[in-house]
Length: 119
Image 1 (cartoon, rainbow, N blue to C red):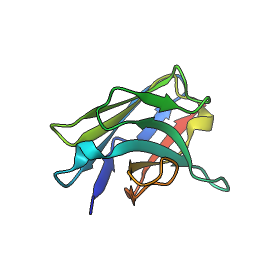
Image 2: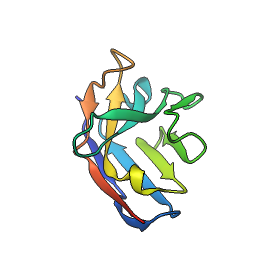
Image 3: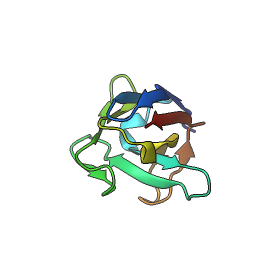
Image 4: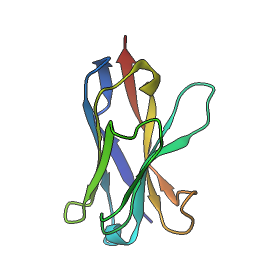
């Protein structure tokens, strides 16, 4: 069982930055790939970034490439999402996820953190 707790969401103006954090419980953190997904009203929950267990490879949705950066600290059991050049269309609830069984289907979710970007 992995418990995930996100933090760092909030309100920011367009062009601004936010850094999300996700603290994970358990002693097997590095055995999970980790991801960030987002969901806005009326839309599906989609991955925006994923990182493998070692942190050596990262993957991004086209909509955030060059603006967002995912990273992890396997000592602190924490994954981060640095979000730069934020735009109103980035407004969503952002969820942290732990991935092991299926690259496209998280095994565990956090509760989500709201990110609102004003124009």
